[in-house]
Length: 117
Image 1 (tube, one colour):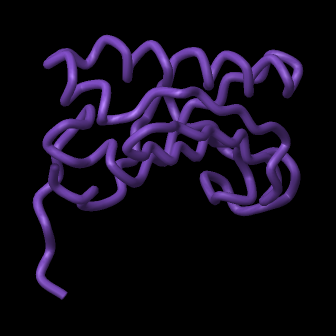
Image 2 (tube, one colour):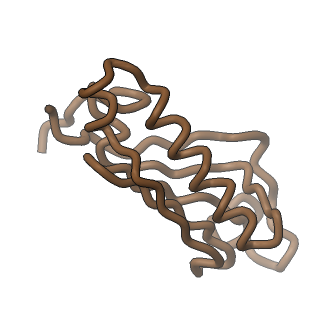
């Protein structure tokens, strides 16, 4: 297995500008999902105003892709963790997700090439 290669930013829908006095479109102005996908587990945080408003986990990682040859288990695990975090945050569904870890490997959802250090 290859190591995760980077960070993936996914616009789940349109990015909303902030209404709380922060810079429009800044991290402080909008909620977003932070997704950490590993070999065996996936963790999701819903970040609002720079703080974790909710956290959820799923026992799904790229090992499942390696074992089955399919992304189905990984996709389902990520989806369920997002739904649980959203539920904990009163149903909020941010328009942006920031994903890192093995999700960017050749067994993840989107392979990103390595960058020279």
